[in-house]
Length: 173
Image (cartoon, rainbow, N blue to C red; front, side, top):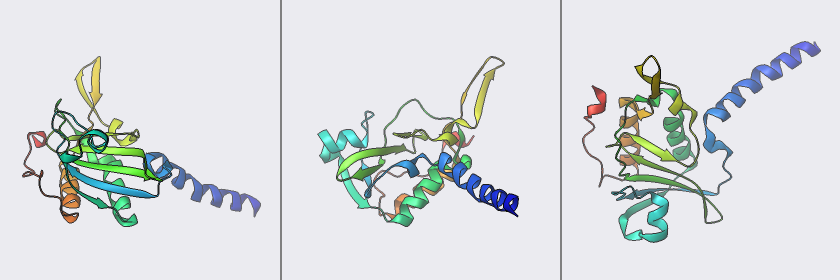
């Protein structure tokens, strides 16, 4: 009977540990998460805009627990990656995790460039690889078509539309 209890405990614990590892944002100790619509052209990330260039921010929304979970689910899913990305980075959608009004984490997303920059390492971005030769490959860390669509829908639900463009992309070829 004791062995069964230990097995059951492991059976329940292992999936929780795996899920926690695949979502690095779960380890952040935050009291507020805010989404921003902003003009990040020239590679300006949301943290730079908040500290030095607030006029680039056009809108912000404090996220609910459900919205945070939905966004993290999109961004940490293995199926959200697997495409290429552009070398430019002009983000228009940013998310900032705060604890006592101090920034403790951030995510910057550019659907045109097809990828994100995050303060936390997202394991799903390293799952798929693009092979160039027998000796060289690189991570396929660009968003999948499904992920771009999900992020676009998430932004629209927040009322963010200023920097969204049609979702047809060269990355879907």
